Length: 155
Image 1 (cartoon, helix red, strand yellow):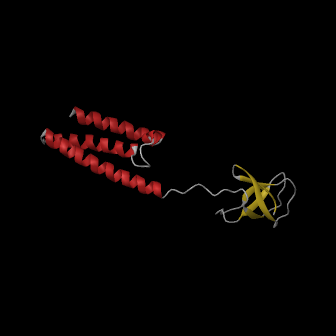
Image 2 (tube, helix red, strand yellow; image 1 turned 90 degrees about the vertical axis):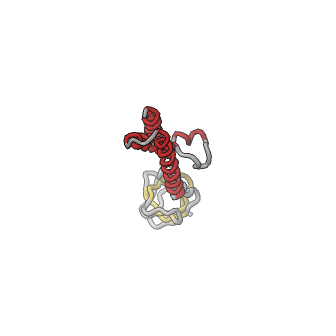
Image 3 (cartoon, one colour; image 1 turned 45 degrees about the vertical axis):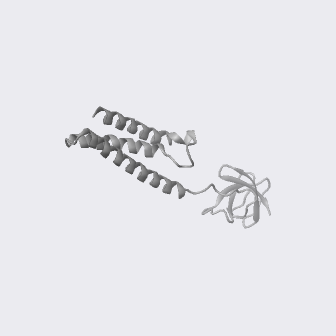
């Protein structure tokens, strides 16, 4: 029973470390999303738990290992597939804003203002500034980006 408890404990530590600090195996470049520390941790925890349960049910030690390995492999494969599907649905990086066109929604100048940009999937007005005063409703182009703010000039 000690083997199952130790491997399950190591799996729990690996799983928690992967959840708190990010995927442990990601820094080792093991495959392109091909192996996850979370899936390995889940497999080890399931191995330990199912082995302990099999021994608690008075099954022979050989069957405890067979059941532990079987459930561990199944749990790891299912976890890895779910992780892969979730990572495939992640959004890509936002499009670059330099050179994007838009319209000022408020008077914009050195002290600030607002613009609505075209084609960058912005849902709301974006904070902006310009070197000179630009009236509301003027077509502008982005010349620089600083965080979520953009510097604009008349187009």
